[in-house]
Length: 330
Image (tube, rainbow, N blue to C red; front, side, top):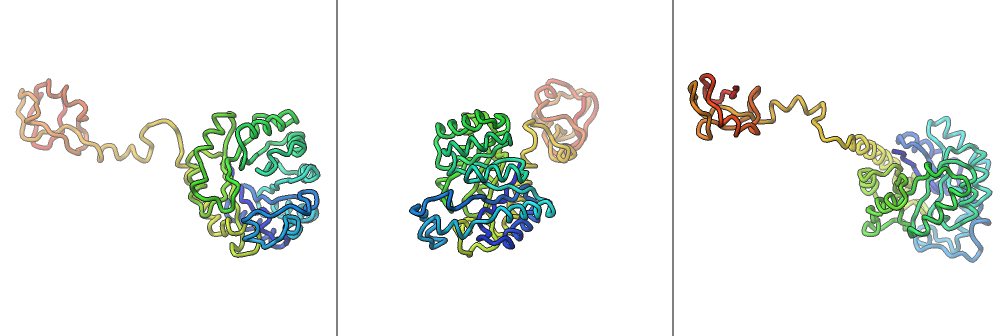
């Protein structure tokens, strides 16, 4: 299972803060730390309004104003990629325009991320597909038909069809629990036969842990150094301690999913003889006496016959004397 620690724009436009986010992500045990690569002037118009959660958390009057403050330079991303390498965590960033796709490809990312808002951006999808890299695509706000159209665009442009992962997602920050709809993960899996994961915008870690238990192959979660900081995503993000808790919980769930085979595991086999009952004498039984409900009982005792053999044993006679509580043998 891949865990993506989503730094996003929680650096607030500061390379130093971004480096600290890399260090926290690496320390948490996440597989990737992910940022967002965009040019504000190419992404939105000057008239683009902010979402309600952006107004609450940023106070910006327009998306352009907000995004200009949150933009990192190409030089910054090059430095972050190198910092990730030295910190021992893989670098990833979401491109929001065709030029950013080319930049990240040349920077050496090992997969491409398509965010929910770009699932209907055909030129971007074609550019992502043309890289030939594995793709992780979020599906927030989308229908199955829109998801299918995006998949077709990616594959026709060159994305490997067997290396695309869909992330179920609800595009609201934070996401209300009743709108999470984790069961939609199975819908996506059944509809497209692709690996499915979850991009989590809820408060806390429990929904990500539940997604892991439902078989998510990728978990993506925002994190920040300060939940109270000004910015669009801080309030719906984990702090570093919570990120470490999330990674630990997801790894435990991943290990616990184990095998679909229903067998006694190695650690429990040793308990069979002490936890299960066997057939024992409920009173002294003499050789030749017929076994019956009157002289047998089931108790925990080592070395006896399973109570599932009860009817067979009751059809037999005692081959020797048995004392009270002595396991029956034939």
